[in-house]
Length: 148
Image (tube, rainbow, N blue to C red; front, side, top):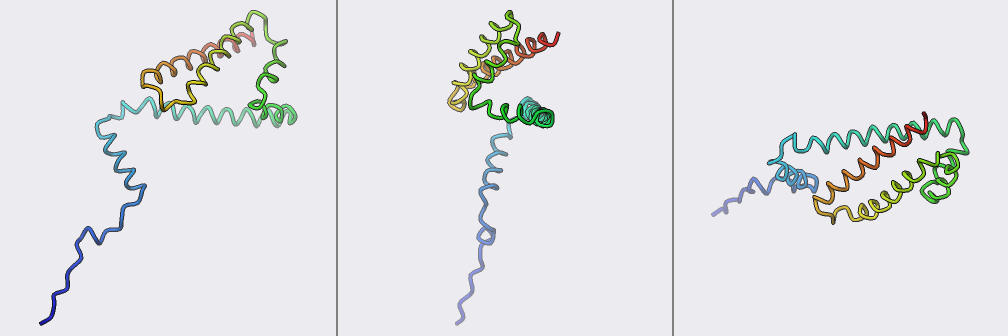
């Protein structure tokens, strides 16, 4: 008597899920209770960051075209920011130096916390975001006053 051949089950015929597919399913599950309005601020902030990166890239390129040596020094700014900033102290109006120093100290404080961003509470992340925007607004105001 012949033995009936067992048919494979449909789920066994499917290819195993890739990590990307699994992640996508997790994302769908997590986001199913969120609306587009809930994530819109994150999307807009990301778009703004992309635009800012574009402007930064253009400014760096323009500086490099105008003065290759200045560009070279500017690109090393992260290695010695105090040297770079000290070269401008004489050019900054005295009444603005105090404000710039206060903003610099604020940024040092914020950067320390940003190193452990994931460990911060949601409320602290919100507070830091507000503080960063305030620093940016103040810097924009001060820089705008330089050109007047």
